[in-house]
Length: 155
Image (cartoon, rainbow, N blue to C red; front, side, top):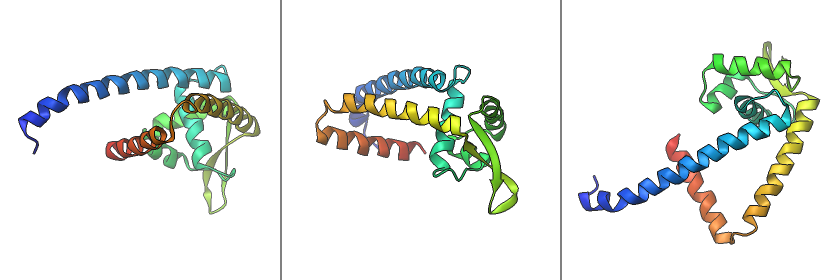
């Protein structure tokens, strides 16, 4: 248990962190929508989150189960299913047979989906490098470590 003095001292610090995280989340939502539109004009931000996770988890073109994507994103399976249907309709992902389970289907990016997502990711990485090139290595290390700690505590 923390003392009242520590709580009073940390209150403005926590308030500032909450404000900064809120600003970051707003920017991230806006950026997700913009990036989604760059992959496909009819894709929404939720679709961008799905395609990102499918690409990340399905590495090397193997594919990933929809239930694993839902779990990783903390979403209901029915929500993910609707998003997957939209991405399939847009020609960005496809369902393929699971080589380990003939009854199961895996999700993977189509050639078009992979090309568009890869081009966008390369552009986004250039933009991040331009920003982070102005930071010193200790700050970058601290940012990575602290974000990892925050994500761990939030999970």
